[in-house]
Amino acid sequence: MFRGRTDVYANRWQNKQGRSGYSVACDNEWVQGLCHKPRVKCQDCKHRQFTEINDQIIYRHLAGQQVVGIYPLMHDNTCCFLAADFDKGQWQEEVKAMSKACQNFEIPHAIEISRSGNGAHLWIFFNEKVPAKEARLLGFGLLDKAMEVYPNLSFDSYDRLFPNQDIMPEGGFGNLIALPLQKEARLSGNSSFVDNELNVIHDQGSTLPI
Image (tube, rainbow, N blue to C red):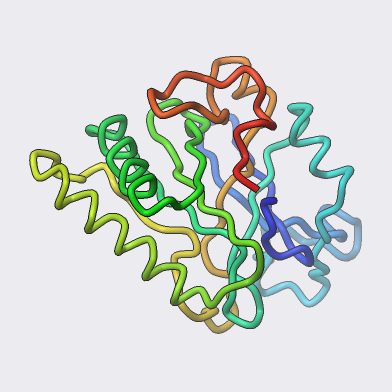
């Protein structure tokens, strides 16, 4: 379902000062003699070896033992899903408006409340890989339609699309997005799929369109 790159993923971290972010998972992280963080940054490390994502890692995410982020943009500049991010402001009404645009064009989709509870992702899943450029054009087109139907909404809450690039940036991975259904967040009703009125769906698996 959430088919991003399998050869690399990221873990969310938070330090004692409350700062948080994501770092690419590495098989050699904190291995004595190989990992020299923080003196040597990961992108400059000659011993960096990316960790592949697998069922155990996904289970740990679902069980609340870690928070996993995936990279939707593939090596060949394709993707298997598109996600629109709405954050703060009138995010509730604006994600509903994009959902309505999807319904008008009979495009299967799913709405997920974000980890913080202060935003939402609208997911569209593809049966097979499509060029990221075309997927993003679909996303922008749906946003335009939503703005036409709901001119009273500013859509200031719209943040970005995932993937956020048409082409893989040199030396990078493109933007990551957190996997849904992380247990700790779900206990607060977040990181969960909701219906068109943003009510949490009891059977989370049933909401996925494919």
